[in-house]
Length: 502
Image 1 (cartoon, rainbow, N blue to C red):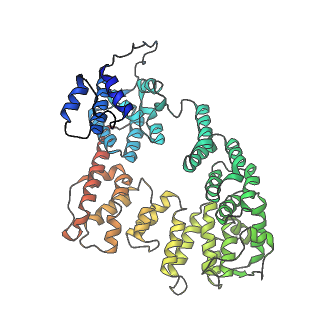
Image 2 (cartoon, rainbow, N blue to C red):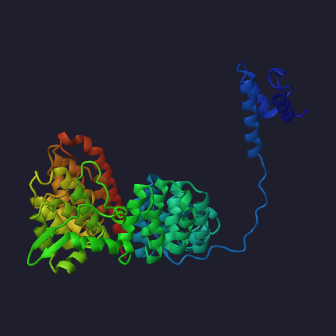
Image 3 (cartoon, rainbow, N blue to C red):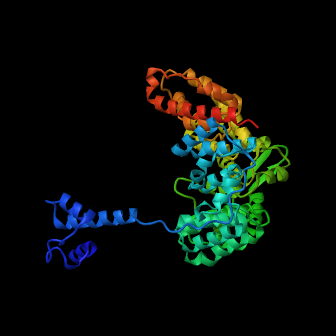
């Protein structure tokens, strides 16, 4: 009986009937002897495990097949050793945001990744990050990507990607299915819509709402029939998504109905008077369109006005009234419904951003007395407007808030909503104020709370100043670890910008 048979016999018969494995030799015997004193069951399992590892380690390699193709020569120059070092550090720390910036800078400078980093970059789990790295893989990296299915590039086969997305839509979990639907929607909107139509009746309400929201990408009149199903859905969350998307379709029946109602409710009398004429009740179709009972704590008139106005593009009011946003909002402020009207218009910014409406609404809320508009609601409304403004206008308002020239929204929220890259003026102002801090005030906490965001958002001209070492005063010591990480990140970004100039 050989060694394996002895262990197999013991495992088959059971340790109660055969308490010892019998004669063994080799690594199994060594293991059994080394573990004397332990229960026989443990000795058996350890011996079998050691034997399996030993056999695998001693297995002969199969014959390697030679490949006809070899990697073509690279045409891009490899990046410098300093950039290579930064990339290695970023890959270890898995800093996707700075990696994405590094790949973009390398592409502009026409540099490629060093060969030793190609497997790690091709093996990144974030598909968007792998796509960002594609221009800097070089010919060797492109060649390698074809040898491993897990390294397949986004541009390799769009049809294969869509086929894989359909498989995930059929077999995946809800989050995977939503991602697959979003991907398909960007490639073939009609096909994605057909997927959702095919499973609509079987989906749970929470999933119907999230899947329906995917139609926002590539929205077209062909989507109206499916959105109408959503508008009549029994779940409020689904109806909410459907109404928003239908409002974004100017020619939809829903948008036309809401426009007709809005023009009867808000009457403009030249030169500058706005009258609000709400009906006692709406018909059943209007209720399905959202003019229903208000949520707790919200008045009926307020609820109806907000629902109506959020579905009307802001440019329509300017055309209908032949007036500017400032004239319209000023007239609204003289009514009993000024705050509700302003909230509806703020929500309508989702249908089309407007700087003039945004600044006018923010100015109105700043002037409102607290008994008319409480501070919490003012902040919420200001945030909703800032989110819809173009990045440069967000940055301009955030700078004014930093300089204490504006008050809405709060500094912490304004900074959080200002996307990268920040303008140089904003970056230098933030850095200067940071070095002037001495006490943990609310303003100081707002400035210190964006270390990570600022590390990514500061423009290249601010990086040398940001990298200069400094320590926070004693009352602010608990933020020193965040400060150190911030300076490490900006130092790495500074190297990338210095080494990768186009």
